[in-house]
Image (cartoon, rainbow over all chains, first blue to last red; front, side, top):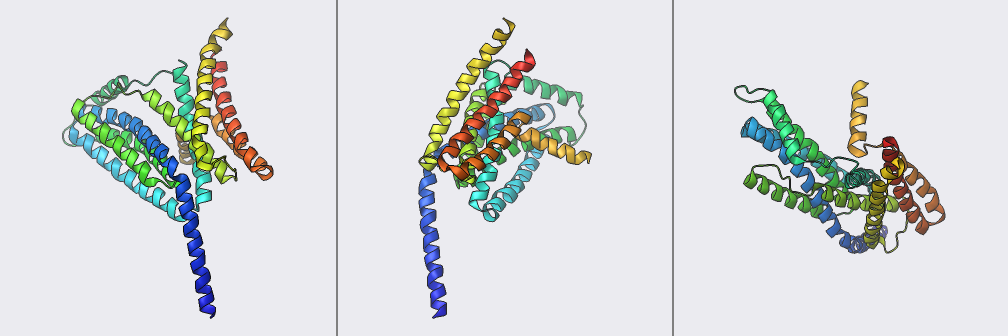
Length: 273
Length: 67
């Protein structure tokens, strides 16, 4: 009798949890498209930057050095994903996860948004993949060319792929874990990786026509919006219509950015006048 | 000690690159915690407004540095 009572309570609890999860899954589904798109754009920008470095190593040192450095960095990133991604999802409760990741994404998104706004306002130089590529080529040439494996080439490719990849991992895991859409975020990053790698293989030169600042601006807006939403949820905020508030946050941040760019463009001339 | 400082600086540089953004986000979170106790609906708009204020202050520093 006692066992039956415990069993029935346990089952009711399970059913209740299932029902709550089903409701939760229904409410987050609209944000999955935003998560996948944000992950694809963010990853695309970082992959373009990594490709520039790998191409410079491959064409000045050797493709073996470039690919070894890339492979080693990829393995390190897979370990990072396994530890951070699966560890976070299994160990940390959703509310705490959303607060921690929300704050991190908010700060990280503001960093990207700030840079993009400064570039639009002409207060920061635009990133030029051709210039980055030439400077890497010069650095590789000044390092000399030895026989066998060139550690400068391997380490440069490793550093480039690992550092840019760390940002991809951070964004994909952040968006995926807090939004319970790790598959969508990973798929977005995967599509971006395939496109950039194919473009690199076909063109054999840096992808300088990619509108990096626009992509970084959009990603900055998305990360800041998700960061605001999840930080708020973690702190007990009741957003109007829950996750459907995301488009409103995005629109608000877009308007804010436009106004800030206008103000920054006008500000120096006002002061010098 | 020097390595620990280097790691902390790398994390700061990776995440924010600007101290105003970091401090602004911390203040926004702290204020939202208090407001959320009184009004769950208004707290979201307070958080949003404080985030916007953080980036505006951060960008204004760039302008004032140049002047």
